[in-house]
Length: 235
Image 1 (cartoon, rainbow, N blue to C red):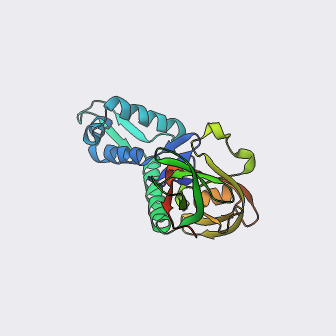
Image 2: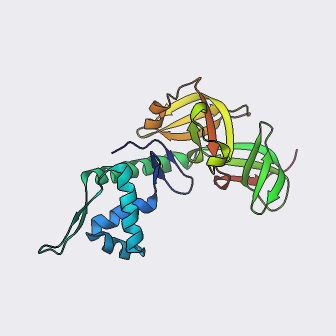
Image 3: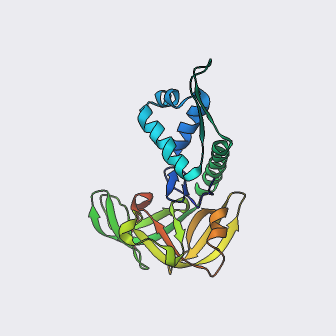
C-alpha cells in the first residue's frame, strides 16, 4: 500500500495517496463492509447505491492495492471481507484523525485585515502581506482572518500546482521557521512576511518527504471555505 502524503481538511480528515483521496466516507464504507460482510449490505446500511459503493472500492484499490476479498457462492452464500492492507489503512486513518483532532482544535493563525470586496458569503481581505479569500461577515470592513492549521497544505515551490489546477486559491510563499514532531503529525510554522507565522499541521511522512526543517522554502495553500473572517473594531 502506498503511504499517504499529507493530512488535511478543516471539515473532515483525508489521506492523499498519489492522485487518490481517501475520505471519511471511504473509511465508513470499509468499516461497513467489515461489519456487514458484503459491499451490497454495507451500501444498504449507509443508504448508498450498490453500484456507487462497488465503483468506489475499485477506484481505491487501483491506487492502494487489494482492500476487499470477494467470495462468490458456496454454502455461506458468498460475501466480502477486508484485507490486511485495508485494516492497516483504517488503523492509520484513525491515528491521524485522533492526532489531528487533538492538535488542530487549538492551532490557528489569526491575521488582521480589511474586507475589499464581497461575493455572497465569500470575500477578499487585505491583510498587509497579501490578500486572503475567506468566508466574511455580511457587514463591516475591519476583520480578523482565522486559518486553521489542518487546512493548510505545504508544497515545494517547484511542485506547486498552477492556480487554475487547484481549489486552494490562497497561496503564499514562505520559509519554515520551526518543526515540532508528534507521534503521527507535526506542527510546522512558516514565515510568510506577516506579523505572526502561519501554523500548519502535516503528517510525519510529509515532513520527511518534503525535507521540512527551518530554512526550507515552501508554498502554503488553503481554501477560502476553510478560512473565516470575523468583525473587529477599527483602531
